[in-house]
Length: 244
Image (cartoon, rainbow, N blue to C red):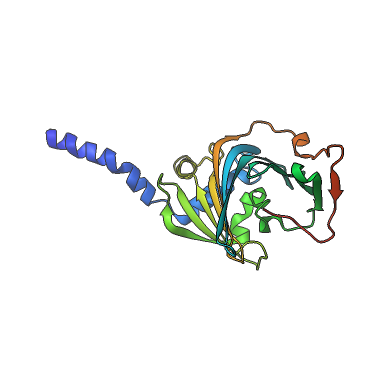
């Protein structure tokens, strides 16, 4: 009797490891994309988070750190977003899905760009707008290592088309989101992206970690329109599309 009880306890202890071992790359990609596709059982319509950013500038071997908060609203055909930086200096990057504004209060200047005809999956600022189409836009494989210290899954992405802004991209995907999708055929309970690491063609790398994530809080469209303060200069470059 004691032996049977001991064997049962061992099985219970090792069940999570077995379940984790059965998770495939296809499972992770499906769990990542599912809550952003039309017809999802529970769709993610918006999310907010605090973020920590670390940028490594390859040409001068320098690291720059930043932080702030981010909001996204996922509409049917476009996404709206707002990145509010508090460090290293105040900056806002805002888009209503058609225009994008980069505002630096210290310079008393805002740069306005038309992004309606731009492939937004190809830009670090707008990448999160297209999580439902990741497998269409990128070749996806396991990261090295496959997991982080908390057993979240790491994916390595390469653009299917040559990109001027993205050489490679690593995504840390919530293990809770993947397990919930695999075991319960359910999506949307957890926001799937916990961190990103983007390397551009010049070897510069930008790492972003999301914290205090909230989703489906009912963000309104008005939050994603830039209202130019009095005395702030408006600049409209003809051929620019600012990123991080």
